[in-house]
Image (cartoon, rainbow, N blue to C red; front, side, top):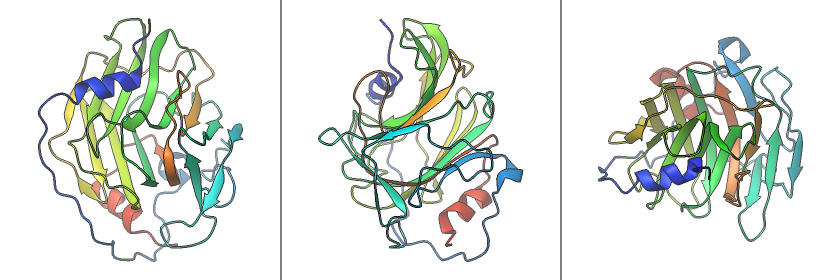
Length: 261
């Protein structure tokens, strides 16, 4: 039986965790044009501004969706963020194959979200080949303990737990019903950074034996708001979901955090 990527995240959080500091103040406004366009390795960007189109220039528009509605974004602009209904009102988005734009490390994921309840069993983002016999691709999901978030990769190993590698934050770095900015940098297996609201999170737990991220089989589809293996519906709002084929510097993280259109 396949060991699910999200299970790895949940199990790993049984380790001892450290406290962390989180910036709870509003970021200063940055009214300059966004510095991180397609020419700087941005390969997909869902702004959810009333549509499910990809704004990166790569044309990776949503392939399918179910029960998606829209709400105000972090600036209070109506219908500028996607809403996911959780287990009681399931919703999800399917994205096209990412294999043409993501071939391995490095990479970075950035998004804004407003979770209703930060709790285990909710998948925010996943990308794999929808092959249930092997762990592959990547997943972003909440951890086992309160206020945690984790990122896991798979190397397409069939069965067992040897085919994954993960990072999970300490607990209580996230807050319910609040807009928060998340960045995860992936330099390689066992080499990750998490940023919450522009601040690098210390004390993350890293583990697993996978040394590569493999999407298997093709096409490498993505799913937002659920896990294709079993129900793990995210409940809350999501905005400005981006993927980069580079590691974001602190300055670039700050640009995304403070950017105001």
